[in-house]
Image 1 (cartoon, rainbow, N blue to C red):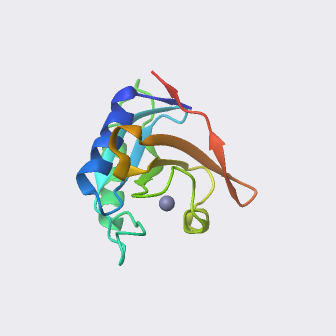
Image 2 (image 1 turned 90 degrees about the vertical axis):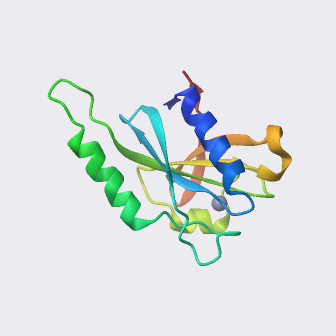
Length: 138
Ligand SMILES: [Zn+2]
């Protein structure tokens, strides 16, 4: 999976900005490339420990992708979701696995409370587990 450097930078900045709450957002791209990170509101009841992307903002992002399609342009779509872990590393929690579904790319940033040492990693759901997906920066 290729991912723009600007996307990684945006995810890191969002994670720091929303700390100590978990940040979350959507990944926009063309299937094999992530070209944009869209910050969304975390509407989870306990945003210090969980995340839920605002459904209204999720629908808005889908509509924006559809509206932006040109005849000769690659098809951009919501292809994944990102979120942060305040104290933990960028490994999926049991809740992350429960919430995951096929075809989406899951990007996790953490731990946020160490600042510069924060890591960003990608995963995909395979056979009920979130398996690492290599992120190639471009
Ligand atoms: Zn998580």
